[in-house]
Image (cartoon, rainbow, N blue to C red; front, side):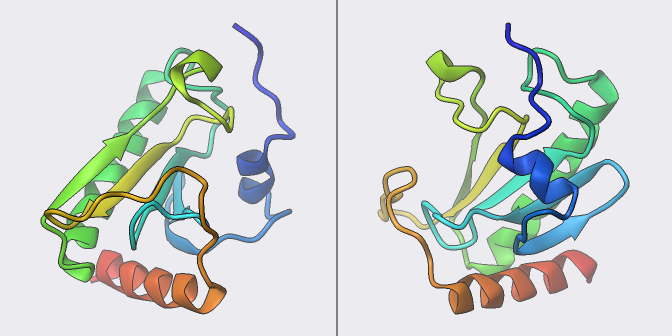
Length: 141
């Protein structure tokens, strides 16, 4: 397996070199909105520690990310009046991984509404900002 690349886009976001629509952060994990969401509220949750994917993450970092994904999913159910949650995680190119820093997709779902295709449409900044503020508020309260 190739090694972790500290120049990947999520590593740059973690270092503050690139912006994001942050919804949650603690000492182990960061959660922010996907700028090309498959559904409103589509959030990415990743460890702060460098990990290429599920195959090389330390168990405590994986546990922290899973706990944050659960918190985000619960808040997203309320904020987006979702009927369910799709949780996705991909490993290596053959497994569908595009950004090689471990991350989980937490996608609020409405019954009967299909998800948009991956990376198909960039959401408007004002919509992302509004969604991030609502989700972050729900996660604090």
